[in-house]
Amino acid sequence: MEKRGTDRPAVVGHVLLATTAVLWGSSYISTRLIVHEVPPLALGFARGSLATLVLALLAARSGARLRLSFRDWLAFAGLGALGVGYFYLGLNLALQWTTATTASLLSLPYPALTALCAWLFLKERLGFHRIVGIALAASGATWLTLQSSQDDVGGAWRGNLLALSITVAWTVYTLLGRRVLPRWSPLVATFHVMAAGTLLLGIGAGLEYLDGARAIWSGRAIALTLYLGIVCTGLGYTFWNAGLASVPAAAASAYMYLQPVTVILLAVPVLGERPTAGTLAAGALVVAGTALAAWRGRDR
Image 1 (cartoon, rainbow, N blue to C red):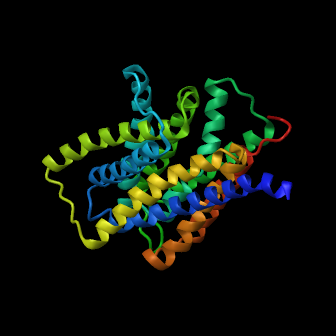
Image 2 (cartoon, rainbow, N blue to C red):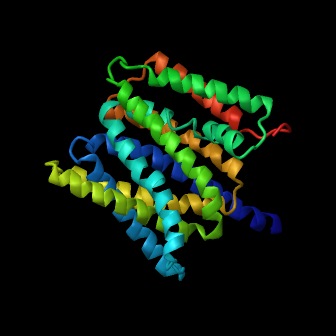
Image 3 (cartoon, helix red, strand yellow):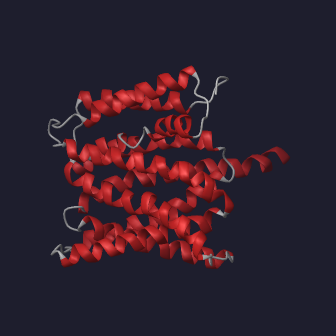
């Protein structure tokens, strides 16, 4: 009986992490469905605003103190610009030109890029298996990016490059976040990162509107925007942070492989995407390389 009680938080953590990965995978499908109806900056701002509201309500319920000094907030502003502002803008633009399947697969090399940058800038050691993994992931990502045309799905190289660029931005966010985020509770940190990124997106959305871009707020667009902001982003980030409280980060990272699986399972019936053999082979190479780079064996 005592053992079951001890294991329960970890089980709940694994369930939360798996749920988050599925939600984030579904966000690619939802975004792809409305990205031609709602301009990219307006969609990012709406999504970020809803998520910020959810996080503020959760913080109020838990009694978390959200007030920060201006100096501390500047650090969160930089992280928000990368992890929220550019991430949502880049993703929304990418999904105008490439497929949800390819974009999701190009998000996977992030652990490999993080390991490489940690070696370059933080002087962390790289074992042989991680070097091989980085090489495989890079090869697969390059293969995916250079596929300027895909049978029946219409992927474009510029969309692929944008999808890969947000992975690079998230890698930089992770490295910078190591120095800032641990000083604060996950809820407080996530709220301020989201709020800062949303503020930046709001400025961009205003300029986008003045430039003539107008959203078509159909019932589907409204429903999916609410789903993206409240469920995928607000609750998704909360679930992920809660899961990390009881599951080691190395084990948690494995759940990210559920994201492209979710995208592929939904993209075929919902979006009519038909990934080519080349796309799937390149994606498999990315998955294998990333898994090898993320694995921590004896030669760390």
